[in-house]
Image 1 (cartoon, one colour):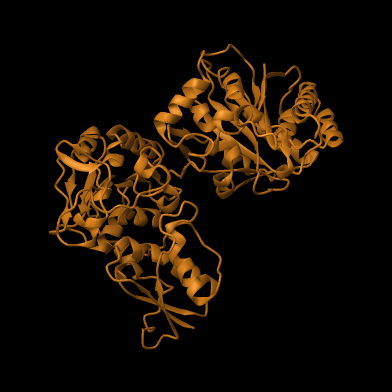
Image 2 (cartoon, rainbow, N blue to C red):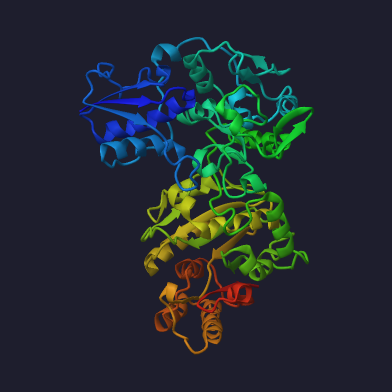
Length: 578
């Protein structure tokens, strides 16, 4: 089939870059198809693209479709795949999604050209269009950022020069405003160390070329809609009433009175920053936040820093940094509890319900020199079978900051067939993510190594444990993530109908006794005889084969019923350690 794909008029250049994803995936699914693009497309981004056949025109095409993104602002679907779904819906087909990035091609002749800027540099996009000023961080913020890295990082300022652009020059940055074509911009980013930009064209180009990027997003767009896994997406969604649940997608900070429709889409909470009106959500992002994100990328300049955004913020813990910090302070109130334990069992439910247990576990980590925390956690939504699942991202993003992943150990472990890397499973799973902000507060120097397990056999558990054992030293802690009894019809588990709370308490004590025996076979026997549905039972068994849990005690116990009073659906939480 000859397929001609059109973009609507007046689309941003970034939309053309995103469309390359749909072209790639359509061609892979249908190698015999001939594809071309037109309408509002910027053709520069399809140059050298082997999936494009310029012989297909609107006149010669068998089918013409218009690519749109019908679920804009979704918190469950990403902008990158929106065009793919739109096109497939019009064609009545379904195809497999490819890599989570756009696809751009530079020719050999382009790559052989002398570099526009010699030496290492970062590309800085600081301007904005008057039609979409709600993305603007503020001129003074950018000036301070450039000054922060004076004599340390070379910034190259990009962007156009036209009447509808506000893009004042930044002292200390190399000025390439209005001096690059789209192809030259691609080459500039390709050779760069990274990109700093609002949600705009450079972030899509950076993703295509696997370049680090720090995106200053504010509260306009939700990270699940716009953010890339390998970029640091600095957002404030959830911190203000106007973006409490999702991004606002407003266009302008203040109306211009020019008669355009954008005057009907105005920021509801503007502030003045050094006399300049900017969205409050953008002003919440301090220069220090952006500078620290750049430093994180620079520390890993030997390769692209890949960032996993939080998918549990606003669910298991607050999305607002200030609210999250307040909640953690409540949990850790009372300070450190002396302990040299090398293993703990912790719940992974929300901070309100499981806070009592979190307090007993994480206060025992405070004040210790802990450099690595191995998290053994269940995989709730995808059973990886006999293998344990790791992730090779550089770090994990939480509302309170970043926590580094021990990706080097993850890669070495994957030489063992008992392990594999699958970042997508980790991205969906809450059992490890929920613990990251607490780990960051209690053991700020620690890197984490999240290990997700499904339902491995005893032999597979032993293989996983044997491979992890060389990583255990006096600076390491093993943290087993597991809620305990899940009671109610929704869990298909109701063995104590006359006294649910009493039955749950007795069952959990029996489980804890079996765990503290140090004998994994005894715990396995308990599970078999009781039918207990402890979600992290295989993670616990693996930990018991990794370390001696003999003498481990219950530090705290409570249930969700204490918080919500719901007797039809009860989850119990147990903190164990020494």
